[in-house]
Length: 111
Image (cartoon, rainbow, N blue to C red; front, side):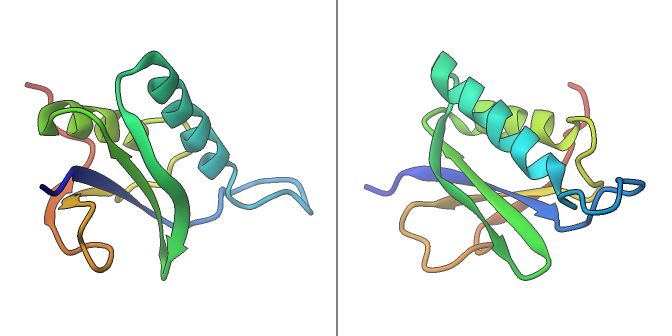
């Protein structure tokens, strides 16, 4: 049976106003740290290493129900420095490529 995976697609935009020579995407490390903390706490499982896919950077989480995974993805989208325009894609571990599932705009509206 397939396992649900939520892909978090973040526009691959450099952080403005960084000092010369700085890593242009410090938000990638911030997201990875945040997701590792959620994984350590048992809230979600980091499914795979994040990776660049064209003009987005994709993170993968699983290990919870859809509502909880989308809530975590929404929190990612609101972390300081994360570029606007993130989307979640509800997919499975059997998907042949990224972005083939249902797309959800992030951050989610408060319920």
